[in-house]
Length: 251
Image (cartoon, rainbow, N blue to C red):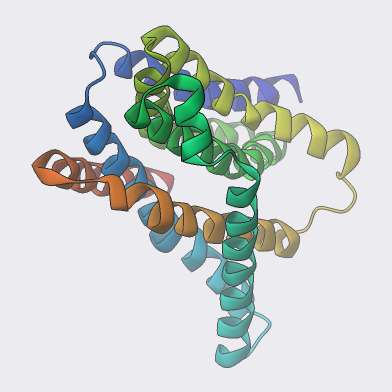
């Protein structure tokens, strides 16, 4: 258990490493557009190329093709609805602009809050996966943690840049990335303490697909519309390519 928890903590801390990399560059509107494209494509790629295919394979073992598709699409739709409702709970951009006196920074802060919340929800089941893999087989746990760490680094970048731009502090951006990554060991500890007897592959897959739906909605609604110009296009491409590398490392 202590070794498996250590793997989970290290995987979560890699998100903070992404935040430290982001802190090397001064925030600007061009970097913000690139970051929005980067974060949006990261979420799209991990949702459509990693989380949903894995769940579909799990469902296909016990359901018909139509049943598998209906289960998957209903869970994705539930995640999208949750994301839309959560978005309504956040302050509107106009309210943030009145507080900060700068519309651009207000929009960046709202984007940062939505992105951070989506990635925290994504990191919770990832932490559970890493911990339980490490408990079952330390070698498997180490490989899983290393692979997750690789794709947590770009997630840290995606969180840190809009926070740094909105708050005019690269240190605060890096701190926000670190906090989002700490959701992994937190999720692992909570699951081990309270849900150890109830966690099944089906339940974990269901939660993961709902989170994929949340990330899809956030990328479509909040992030990709802000990926403007050549910088946004380059960020979108970079996020997709890096996540494909991270997903390949998980195989």
